[in-house]
Length: 160
Image (cartoon, rainbow, N blue to C red):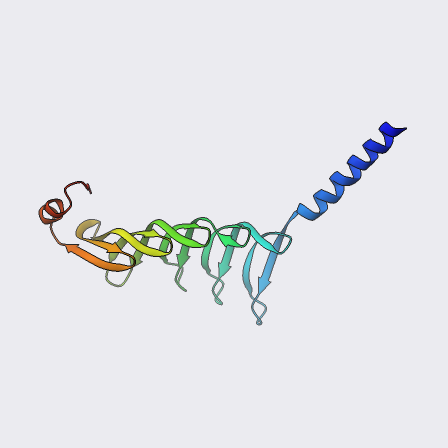
């Protein structure tokens, strides 16, 4: 008898736990009725992969959430669907390398981020060729080089 009660209690506990932790796919809409975002929620928290949309229906950004905070690799797009930037979030802050695409100037910038600020090097490319390197500390530019020789002279322990 005690064994049956114990088993019944375990089944009840397991089923209650499943209902509270169950993920559901969620949709949010603009006042116009167009889709604004969609992704997974666990309770009220955004989790796993989410898509966000411009009012014209094109994706504006996409990436992972962990307990309502951006985590992992994210992509950001223009109204026309062109990739504008991409990079890592950790605990809702930009971290590691980010790539910014300047479509009009045809320049690609690769920045190192730490704690949501530029921290480290920035590499600038035009037509897929490196043409400038910069160094940042606490979001402020502290150095700039336009040739590999001066960069290596000033940064002997760094390689590009």
